[in-house]
Image 1 (tube, helix red, strand yellow):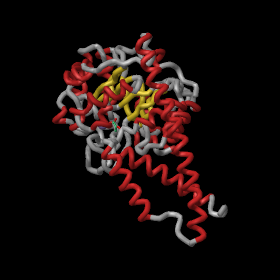
Image 2 (tube, rainbow, N blue to C red):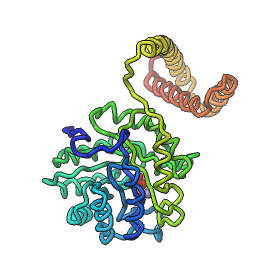
Image 3 (cartoon, rainbow, N blue to C red):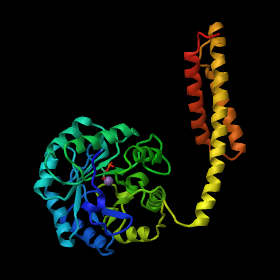
Image 4 (cartoon, rainbow, N blue to C red):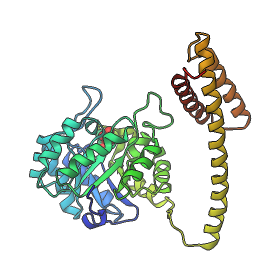
Length: 359
Ligand code: PEP
Ligand code: MN
């Protein structure tokens, strides 16, 4: 991808970068009062505000629509701060551009659909405007990258990604599961792409936002986009997760900054010592996985010869239960152990299916 560095197209007012504003632009008064509160700290690099709201449940507030664009823009002009809104189709793009909105974002429910993304990309041909792409609702890095690539191919070079977490049937304590590993994969494939965290949609509750912001910084994300409302309790959408501007300021001030490359000899030496231990352990883990797979493979022909199914449900449940009991005694995380053994089991079964002929 051909991407311009964020600091060349967005005046960064703070480190880490902060974009803030209401979930939805509800009225001129609400937008102006929220913007005034946010501008006071001098930390906010752009105001966000949704105008067309994709709601899961029909009957929920679906946004004011285009009339709200001018209130958002007015807030930006008043404080000399760029503004960003969500677009979900070509019509939205056209209206946002007419209202001179400075930047656009594509929401999670749109990133999942390549038809919509392509329509937006086509509408942006020849328009030099920054676009932020939220991750799709489910954890598929390919769709996320695909959306970014469609925009890039249409000539959008001012690109950034927003990590807003993923839908999970049960996601406690948060609203969305962070699944940071998806961000790691995005960073690995597109290291030059700026990635912001949206702690509001991950946390879902205002009191958990600080914690998510800190995780994002600890993982080296490039900035934060946070929902803020002058009166969160009266918000027409996402009321539970919006912070008053003063509360957002307090959350931001409490964040601890981290640096990936620290130039301290003692720190580097300690890190290297611990990392070489990890390298050694990883090598042993790999050797043991290899041995485990060899044995699993040898079981394949034994099952086939005896006309037994490859997948033995009772045995699998027993293995899982037993490993989790053992892990509990070692005070290891239950879910982690579950996931590891699920993977080991999956690859053992695959090996047995492939190896059925070789008795
Ligand atoms: C939003 O930012 O208000 C929004 C609807 O976000 P998402 O697309 O992440 O659900
Ligand atoms: Mn929202």
